[in-house]
Image 1 (cartoon, rainbow, N blue to C red):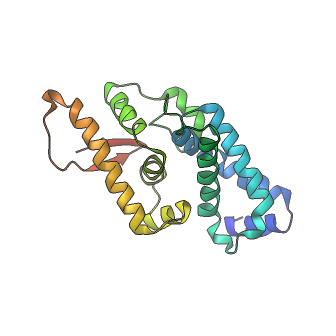
Image 2 (image 1 turned 120 degrees about the vertical axis):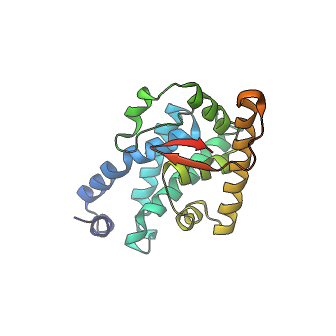
Length: 199
């Protein structure tokens, strides 16, 4: 059964359809929430709250084929709300930079703790919430600019601007750690298998 049909059934009150969507997205959302919040207990709370809101407000979703970005938008707003409740920036300690999208949070115990990973981890931790969210959505969730804009409730231009600023900040941090601290010019950022590389 395709996702659009599951959403249609869920709107009609089919609990099995909700369960199917929950199983499909729970690990992806948990991974995303953990990358953004930096705390396991926060991530679990954020995901649970996201699914409660999804269940309660599914009738607000106009297009059934737009379920994924709508769900991500709920998660983003919920994560942001959790950060505000704590009266501080989203916690930055112990953020996992590399996680496997297929098995979600279980892969966090298998993060490769290489020196490079630690440097990238520290660099991403230095970003504020809005820039970190763009990095997570673009590099780890591999979402196109248009969908990211929809999730974050902003224009594609704003997404591009935030991503540009995030890249610049990340590059600046990593350049300081390069051998001899040499500046390598306009480094490009790319991601493979949930891991960032600076060229």
